[in-house]
Length: 149
Image 1 (cartoon, helix red, strand yellow):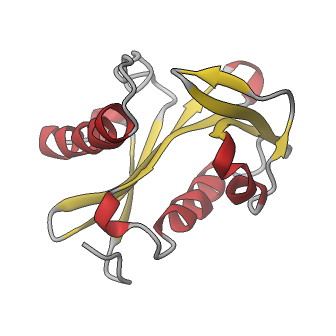
Image 2: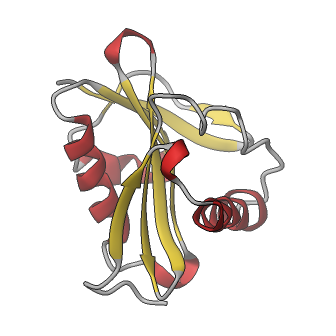
Image 3: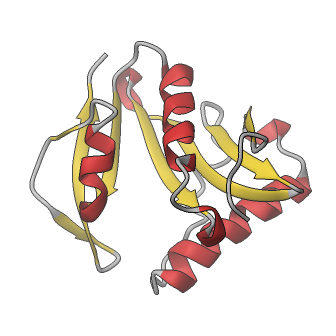
């Protein structure tokens, strides 16, 4: 499952997601965040269905290869989260494609995210800077980051 140029990038609101695609997205998130990273946490936090949430994913051969979501936080700030790449699709720039698309969707608005600490350098390439000290979330060190408009 190596990402190739024919991985198709898609963007949708919750209402526009078909149930099969939603299932595949949630399955990928669970496989990586709950099983691979060994975190027992409630992935279904209620924010996927919010009006301002945008879902961005890549798919190839009927499989979701990568995903992230953008949440509309208070004060006109966009929050990027749940950034995930399928294990067999890693190392070929798919997360970068998703981030570039997210920043296009966000436009000129400020954006925040909580990066797993070992990935802070990756997000820095997209203009995000640390805004506070490292903290533990579900047993994993994270760094709050922000990119201004």
